[in-house]
Image (cartoon, rainbow over all chains, first blue to last red):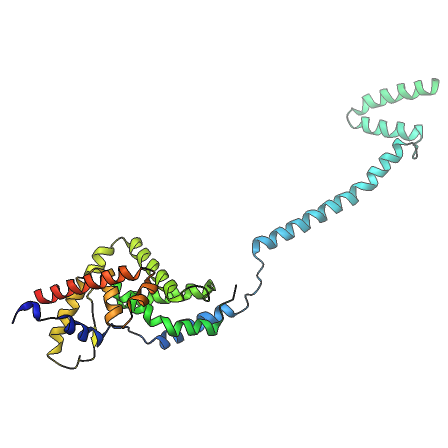
Length: 128
Length: 164
């Protein structure tokens, strides 16, 4: 028998029409194993999560604002007082100012020096 | 745009999953890989909620499957060696016949020697009974191209079988 006639078109067609490829698992099984849970997970509403980074930023901004407010409140009375003094609303007496000045200056000098200086200053004040 | 519902997705899966797996097996000769790629393609369809009402869904699935298949082998850079190393296996209605196994092996060997494009076109036509037009639509090619591929495949297959 001639080799070329061994496998004719007809024979090949007959063979291939009855053949298939091995597909392995049944598609329903694959659906049950993979897609059922996959679709269920996809359909589940995603919980809203606040990341730690965002949370820190929020706290940071809130803390900064709180600090600014606190500093403003703390500094405001002093500023007011200085302003009022500048406009003459608060007038310190001459003696008070002299006492303050003397007290501050006295911190930087020796006691004996202070005594000499005080007597001289006091006498001059009285004479003048 | 129409949103893909679970029912539509299940229907598409039932209609096309095995066709896609077969097509990928014709190309690769690897059962597990075909299954994995087919699953990936369907997962992408669901995740991206691709509008399946427009165009030919089978063609889209085959295109996505082909792209995944190619990128898989490009990544591994062993396409030629890997495909060549795979045995192309068939199942047949006459498998119970002891004398048949030798004949089947000859077919498997001869089919493996075809190019994957020739094998795809030939087996879609002969095994699945698809017309040239249907194959052309699925693979997004012209009918002429499919006709040519099948004719060449049949000629090469016959030569391979007769020379074994």
